[in-house]
Length: 189
Image 1: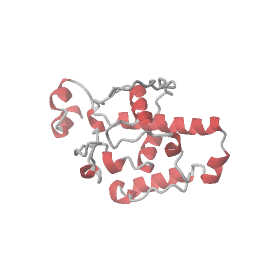
Image 2: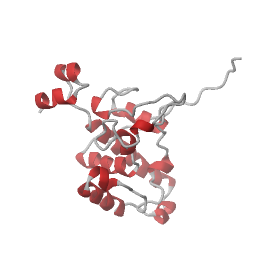
Image 3: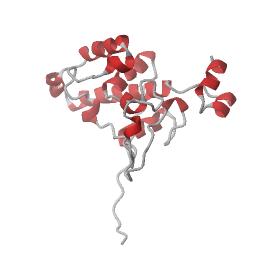
């Protein structure tokens, strides 16, 4: 039996900010705090510690996406990656990164667990320093809706730019050998 329902309103994508090295660096911190690495791996290759345990909505094994390929399911522009992050991927374990997630519940006290084992001391210390600069839960509660949205948008775009920074270089050799990074590593560098 078919039922008709109204479609959801179109998602209005904000204009992306200018990509900067600072924004990419913050994206790396967001990636760590949100524990994107658990599925996608520390280097974004889809080889995180939870990668072998994931299933789709039909209980079929599903591999986390390897960001280094640069061939995204919904398009590779910054706007398209942003849209994927804010809507999630239906049927997959990839959640929508809603404002309450992007605000880091707990603020600077957000748990960034197990980072040392996957990123090493230096990165774990960088994440701890980043979190120390973030508003705590009480400060988050006092932010206006506009201020909270600005914080969330900055973190979302930072994550977009960081994930896109993981892509390997493109070109004919990458196109031919992109599935085997060892074949392109020596050629691209």
